[in-house]
Amino acid sequence: EFRVREAPILLDIAREFRRLLQNGHDVVLDHGLWTPEERGQWAATAMEVGGQPVLIYLPESHEVRWSRIQKRNEQSLVDANSIEFSESDLLRHADRFIPPSNDEPHIVYEGRPDEILDLILPAGGGHHED
Image (cartoon, rainbow, N blue to C red; front, top):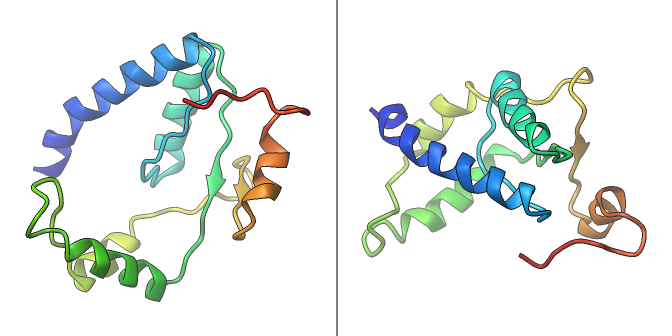
């Protein structure tokens, strides 16, 4: 049921993603990108409109992910867009994620944003604040 409900939202996001890239904006796609195939589809979408996709992988321990979910769960009673997610849900879904392999170009984020920015931004900046 989730995939059925998610599909039209992802179509809207893809349209906006394309529009922003076509207009010369830098775009951060903050989405699960769980499989190489899914990551490849979004990368192809970016390249179709002249974008340069950069995959940044943020590895994190189960403990940190669960702590973040617990904080988000606290909002589930006051935010209609938030859903309750159990630790067993996290464990079940974690097995579905396929980390990028050496064959898939990516940058591993290790908690130092300046290093990432130095790798992805042209010399002297040049990014939009959108």
